[in-house]
Image 1 (cartoon, one colour):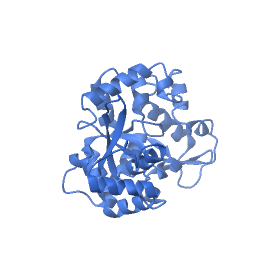
Image 2 (tube, rainbow, N blue to C red):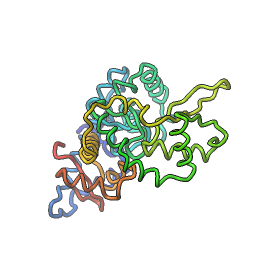
Image 3 (cartoon, rainbow, N blue to C red):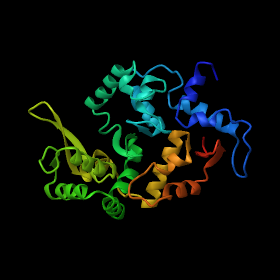
Image 4 (cartoon, rainbow, N blue to C red):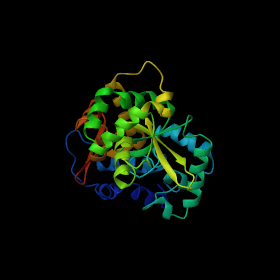
Length: 298
């Protein structure tokens, strides 16, 4: 590893610093060594395109990156790759808007939106940890199976606030709801909208109003590009969930068990994600009080 790459590895995640400097940590039965974890963290920085590589300049580079990783965060950060960070070619501290590369990142993401890159070649949804996520089309059928499952939707809606449930009824009844409606306007309406979006219960777009503002418009989930891109026959629910969880771990390269447990907050039972990961025979590491996971292919 070059001196240039070492800081990128150390900053790749807020959890990484706890994993460094622990080469003498005692091994536990069934767990791999801290040195092996350190090597995976270095590999992760390279595969996430944050090890000091050249910034992305074209939409082709963005599409290839998502195609290789399969599932990437569009907003926020975690142990999955971050598209804004990959565009910059390095880890970013705080909001990317405050970074020197902010204009470049914004311009490339806006071009992707304008060219329809996120509406066919790639697809988006608030999927992983309730953050906007870009997925490759190969995962659309699994996302649709998860999102459209009646029992999952029932549990997710039961966990929503009364206003969010009222908003869901309005979407089902009217076909679409503009969020500047008096009964849903304001901060409480925004919170209700986010509950439904993050539960994959609705699909949100926006319109440019006469006053120059952007207003969110909610539609039934079936209107989402991911739903329309899915191919029959849909897999079983467990198979679809296992496919998405496995894709997340392969994309992350290595992730803390705590974060992996919260990848899908969609009305699933507590512990469901970790249970499925154990069935996938993942690699496990215990370093500095944290359990880390990696796919067998890492």
